[in-house]
Image (cartoon, rainbow, N blue to C red; front, side, top):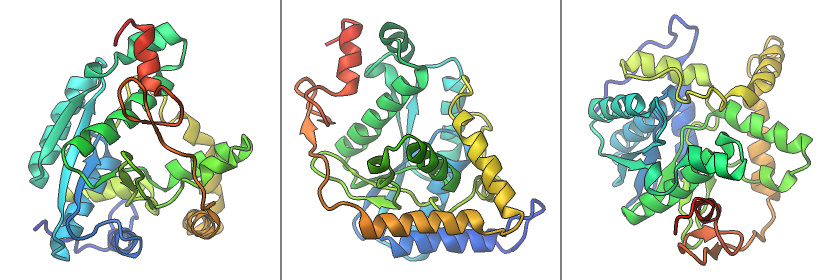
Amino acid sequence: MLVQIRIAVTKQGVDLGSYRRRVFETIRRYRLVEMGDVIYVAVSGGKDSCAALSLLREYVEEYRVDAEVKALHINLGFGYSPKLEEIVKRQAEALGVELHVAYAKDYLDILAASKASGRPICSVCGAVKRYIMNKVPRELGATKVATGHHMYDFLAYYFKNLAGQNHQWNFKILPKVEGRGLLLTKIRPLIFARPEENEAYCKSKGLPVNEVCCEYGLCGAAHAEVVEMLRAARRRDPDFDLKLMRGVVDFNTKFRPAEEEPVKKCKICGEPTSGEVCTVCRLRSLLGAT
């Protein structure tokens, strides 16, 4: 079992004891880990997914849950990808978890598809990652897939959708989204965790992490304004961000529509899609792939 954190407050001012209890309470309250689970954690090489992997493993061991926690890394085929894959291998070794590496180019060349379609790299990359994160773990016997998305990821997504009046999308902001058909159940153990807490936790464990996981530097750009706003609010109320996140989850839990968009099977690959052909197959067709 990993050594438990004994120091309550780190030099960064983060209360790691409170943070760990909060994450464990999220796992317990929302039944993110259950008996017989095989959970694959999508790890990028960064602090957030590394923290999610480590904490889920700690939870399973501490509470003696008959469940398996494994790691999935997607090599995106970018120039920086070999370095990230090496870091992820070191993380998995340090935590003693099984690692499976999937290569995006086995499914779609992201850069080529972005150029051919005119879609931003982030858009294509996101579509491919969602495709692989559902397909590969499911084929490996997973019951759930976990991500390291933290509180500010979800709040940035929330305000973006609110401003764009995409209210239906905001109902997906929950600690656990139950699977349907070929869609795996998704869990977010860090939904009530701050990024600086994840960083302090990984440092306290001596876990290897990479500060930047996208060489294009685009993934966090949309968060900047929301982070600035939340930090300003926290100067008056240190827990404002946490209260807001809890309010969003509480609202979604109580008022999420019972009826959901039907999940179809892609006519080409058979994977889940909302249309007749999934995004990955549409992009593959632009490249002449079948």
